[in-house]
Length: 102
Image (tube, rainbow, N blue to C red):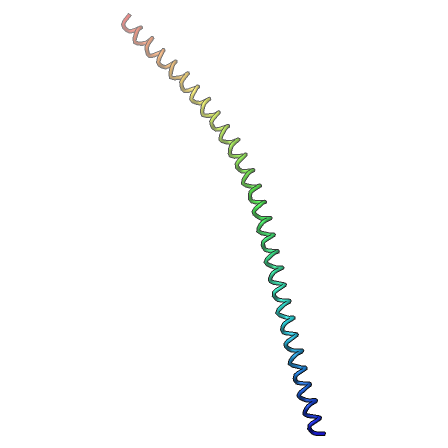
């Protein structure tokens, strides 16, 4: 009778250890799966952010090109005005010098 009770106790302990090991294994599997899922979610967010940042960069490139073209146009117009004014000044100076001598 006592040996029967000991066998039951030992069997119950072995069963308990198996259940604990199985629970630990399932717990680790759940954690690994959660880590995989979170890594995938992070990668998806990073990819989405990269796509969005590229869209924003492209918008700024276009705006920059427009501003650059406008700045070049403005500079050319100012250069043209300066040349025109310089030619007038040179003509006036030449006329003034000629007028003094003739």
